[in-house]
Amino acid sequence: MVRITWMDAMDGETGWVNLGKMRDAKLATCVDIGWMIRNDEERVTIMGSWCLDPQEDEEKDKEGGRYITIPKGWVKNIEYLMIDSMYSDENYGQIRD
Image (cartoon, rainbow, N blue to C red; front, top):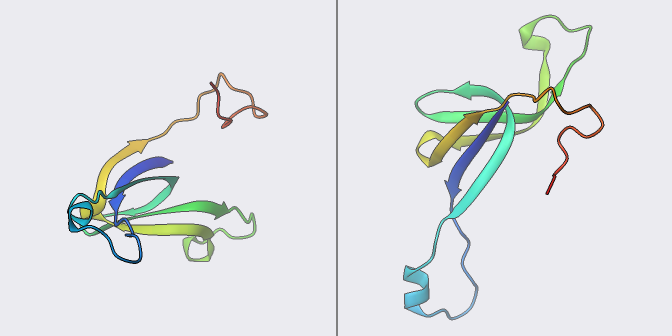
């Protein structure tokens, strides 16, 4: 599992917009979490869901879903995540204050 921080385009307003506001437009900072299935010099691909069908043992038969491919030049950081064993299954992954 990884958490990827990456930059994306920010959509502008419709209608007449002051040129100074356009020049000052920022990029969007995005964060995605998932299983990394590709990381090469061109792109990073992660998926959010993995189908663990016990009948499929060949790599070509495994499936995943909710994937995103991000151009490598847009990626700012990749963090490799570990499961913390101090949390039980019922509260693992919940947002805490």
